[in-house]
Image 1 (cartoon, rainbow, N blue to C red):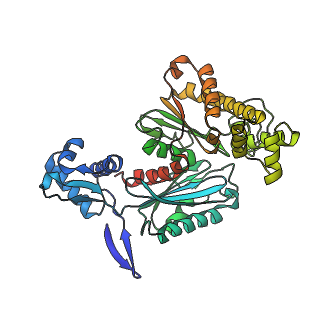
Image 2: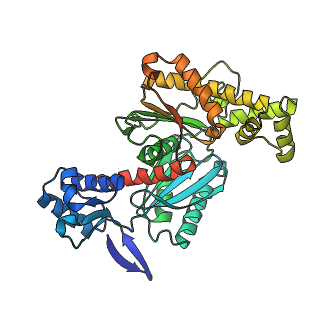
Image 3: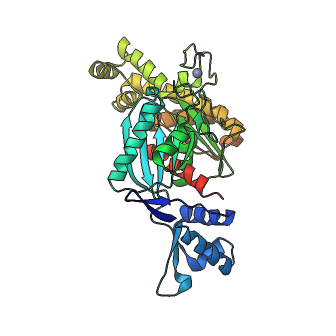
Length: 401
Ligand SMILES: [Zn+2]
C-alpha cells in the first residue's frame, strides 16, 4: 500500500492484487495463516522464481510481508501484512454490531447496540459509523481496507442496495454501499444477512471445510443461505434462500409483508414471542406471566429462560417451534441435499430442546438418502458470525483479481 500524509493523518491507499495468482496467494494466507516461503511454492503449485516475483509485488503493494530468518532465504515466513484491517457489520432487526478483524479475519474488537432497523437507513448507518469510530479510538485500526455489511432483507449485492425488504421500511433501494463508502473511506460490499452469517460460519465456525451446507437463520425474521461446492450460491439475482415469506401452512397468522401463513409469521422469534405473550396472558404459563408483568413484554429469550425453569408451557412452545422449523427444514433439505445444516440467529438460544425437535422432524419427513448422514447443528460463532462473515465478504471481493 502506498502511504501518503493528508491533513496530518497517515492515510493508507489500498492496493489490490493484480492477477488471479496474486489473489489466490492472498486467500491462501488468509485461510491457512503464515507459510514458510520454502513450502509455499509447493502449496501454491508455482516455481520458486515465479513465486518470488509475485511475493515481491505483493510486498511492495503492502498486502503481505516476508519475514527473513537467520537460517536463509527459503526459511523466511510469508504472512499477510499486519496492518490489514476489515470491518464486519451486522445489522439485525433490533441491533447493530460492528467488528474489526485482521487480514486473517480474526476479530480484534467489537461494538454493538440495540437499534430498531425501522428507524431507517440514515439513523442506522450513522450508528454503524459511530461504533466504528469508537473502535478506532480504542486503537483497533487506523484505516480500513474494506467493510462487509449484512442487512436483514433481500439485497442486490452488485448495486449495494436492499430491494423491497419487508422488515425495513424506508430502506427500499437506499444506496447503503455508496453511503458507507463515503463515510468509511474504503471498499464496501453489501449482502443479505444470512449469506454473511454463512460466510462467517464457513470461514471459522461450524461449517469450516464442508462444501455443501444449508444455513438457516431463525431470528426476528427467517432466511436461508446455501453453499454449494464450497461457495455461496446466490442464484440469478441474489435472492436464493429468501424463504421467509413462503407459505408454510394454512395458518391464518398475518405477516408484516401483508400475506398470511408465511414462514416468518409462523416460525420466527417474533411469532414465538406472540404465542408466548398469549400463554402469559391466559395463565397457561405462570413463569411467562411473571416475566410479562415485570417487563411489559415477552420475548423468545424469556421462553428459553422459562423452559430452563421447566415451565411446562414454555417447553411445549419450544418443542412446537422446533417442529415448525423442522417442517421448513425438511423441505429445504429435500431440495438441496446438503452435507450439513447450521442453525443460527436469536432463536437458537432455545438450545438443545429446539434442536432435538428440529432433528426429529427433519429425519421423519426428508428422504433417508438425504438425512442418513446429515448433521444438524447450532452456530459455533454465535453473534460473531455476522462480523467475521462481513470481513470475509469484503476480503473475498478485494482478494479477487
Ligand atoms: Zn410474509
